[in-house]
Amino acid sequence: MDTARSQNGVPIRLTGERWFHITEGHGELAGHYFDVLETVEEPDAIYEGEVGEMLAVRMVEPGRHLVAVYQETSQDDGFIVTAFLTKRLGPIQRRRRIWPP
Image (tube, rainbow, N blue to C red; front, side):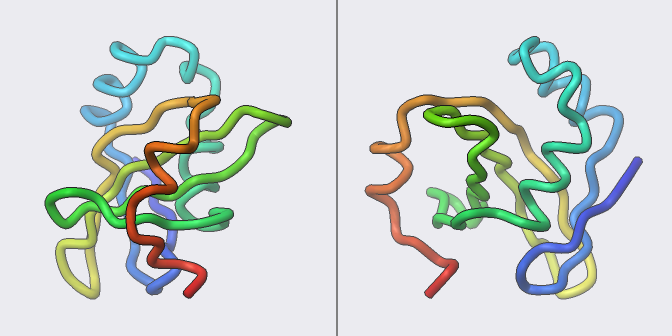
């Protein structure tokens, strides 16, 4: 298990169980473990989710973005829910942008 610091300074865990979930549903991410953590630490933008989660977005190559979905459960703990690659940012960008303000 590794952690990344969110823009709020909260340690965000990426557990083995979550990584298995991510790679089972999104096999193209199998070699991108540290990219997921880096997306939480150094996103291009963060958007509000539907039920308290945050969506950190970072471009990994022109026209392709990595989205790491995570929750901050307290000021001292949080976890990555899932992650995926997308070429379509429109649906995400229609959400409220949290960061940068």
